[in-house]
Amino acid sequence: MKAMSDDYNKKSRVQSGAWGSIQNLFAEATNRLKKNGLSEGVYPASEGPLRIADYGCSTGGNSVAPLSFIVSQFMQKDVKTSGWQTAASKGFVIYLCDLHATDWRCTLSTVTREKILQEAHKAIQGEVPSSPPLFVLAAPGSFYTPVVPPCTVDLAYCLVALHWLSSRPCEEGASPGRGPYSGDMRNTRPEVFAETCRIAANDWVTFLRHREKEMAPNGSFLILNVACPQRSGRFPWSDVSVVIKQAMLELADHETEAGREMTYKVRGLLNAAAIDEDAVTILKCSGEAIHRWVLPCGWRSGTALRRPFLPDRVSGEAERGTEESEPHFDFDVNFLPKEDEKVNGLRLEQCEFVEIPCPHKEDLRAGRIDAEEFARRVTAASLAVVGRSLRAELEASGISDTVSDALFDAAIERAVPIVAREPDEYCLTMTFFNVLISKEGGECDEIMRGS
Image 1 (cartoon, rainbow, N blue to C red):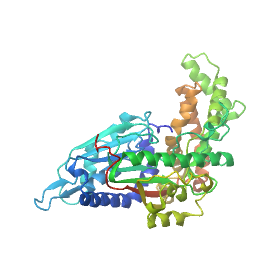
Image 2 (image 1 turned 90 degrees about the horizontal axis):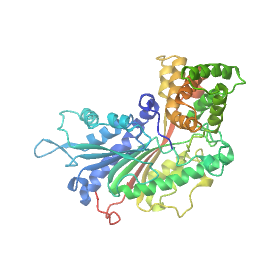
Image 3 (image 1 turned 45 degrees about the vertical axis):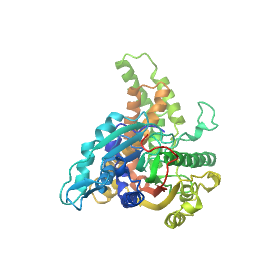
Image 4 (image 1 turned 90 degrees about the vertical axis):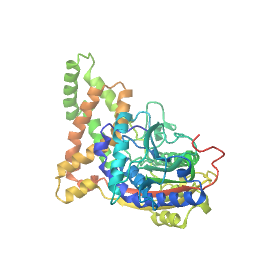
């Protein structure tokens, strides 16, 4: 996995729009937690603050809305005094979990106590309650590892992040430095696709096992899992990244007209910086790095999502939700974990398939933007996701930020006309499985809550 681009907050409108599709499950999860916790006497109000975890928060642009919604659901009027109180009497603790390489300064300036409470107050009709204690904590690390203390998370979510895998397909058996797989987010070659599905299936089990340990009794977990609309593994976002990658390869090839123009530009940049290096050689190295670039992304079917749960811990609604999406989404059934790879303490409550229209395509259709602006938006949105990964590949090959910036800028200008000519081909429609998972009540593996 790679951290998102620094400007991800500004360009993740498609991802943030997906929040609306799962808001009903957030409401169900908060109600479930209040009802189950209060009735069984283990509700966090009696022991400490309500603890919330955002797994895959990135730079925080898509975190404020769900966090403020959760907080608003736990603020209520005291029927005896008619005064405001929080259901979690000692307030809230929020864990923000993402990679160490994430721009945490941006994250923690975006997701603040003030912003969360301000939005929570807006969501509550009528009087504005007093502000409860609320603490925002960074928890750096891959969500395929433990990231927060055991048995401490009452309510957690992971939105549009689990398609990022723990490793790249080419790292499993590819010759060092060769990387035979196309890094265009398609991964459609049979051997690559099979390997990607295996990694995705194993990562899903790993993810669930760590969250099972971190969740408190009666806790709930919500996941917005990216679904793949085609058996081949082709995904709408992949088409834009293919155009960008092809443009960069042409720019790095001295034999093409675009490459010769780029060579001249890079030579000028090197001279201005008094760097005694050959522009042709640098661009050749850049082209090799771009060709090697593979995104560690994979998609899971409804069958794959359901598989790690014991049969008696899959609700009827969740089973119907996954089955209704098949057979169109059963592309990975041959690469799923073995039957004995189960999570024992978790229950799959809901699994709904949803499709989110591309907001940029909606703006284009309504006449609010033209085709060129549409192309610039979807190209920028794609680069905000894949750019950090590609830059890391270039940096590992010794390519300076100055040259990388020049390649990215030129690639965008070459990609925009292509995308603008066929907006239907490049719209960023998203498909998801909206998932709700619960953990059973009782003791938490003899680990004291909050320790």
